[in-house]
Amino acid sequence: MPSLYRWPLLAWLLPLAGALGSRFHLWPWWLGFTLCLLGAIISLVLLVRLPWCRSRHTNGWGAVPLLLPLAFVIQALRVPLVNDVSTDPYNPPLLRWASELRTAQDLPINPAPLKALEGKPGPLYTKASPAEVITEAHALMEQLGWQVRPSPDGLDAVATTGWFGFQDDVALRVFVGPSETRIDMRSASRQGRSDLGTNRARIEDFLIRLNERLGQAYKPNLKQ
Image (cartoon, rainbow, N blue to C red):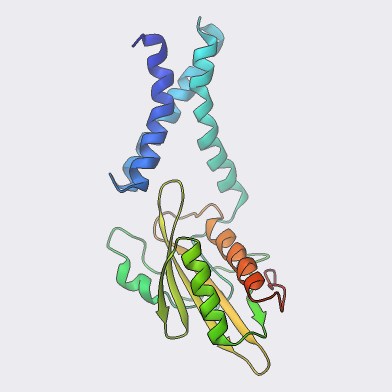
């Protein structure tokens, strides 16, 4: 292979290999991050050299993967530094299944209270019965590709992210009130101090979908 294409090709292949290798458990996530970092460094060097190199078109394509880590940095600056989000941060659903699945390499489960976010996702209220809520929630979780297990007050689940294949722990709690059913949810990352907004987005998306399956008796109270 001509040396002209070697570095731009590495700039593309390293982050792809790092992410996919972590996704399919070929190596640990930190090694995948290291490969992505090496790819970003190569892209940065190609970008810096761009004004003086002869093959600007080739080096320009080699600098494109640098956009991915830049997007991650921008997203990290936009969202709060959290990795555990709940509709009820002061009394969040328990992560029972997570306590069995997490290893010494994973983060410990955060004790209550969790960090309360401005405009935090709030609970969902519905006239549907608890049994109906759990049935629909279970079906929705399976549709989303999550691993699901019943819990004493609702459902426990494991959701896998699409890029690096991180496994996040989810708990759904169903509470019967005097006139309606309240649904609380919690989503927590096993790795990393920041989830880049993934857990909050997961809760909001799931409750909107669940509300649609329940006939939209109530709009999700996502902001309190």
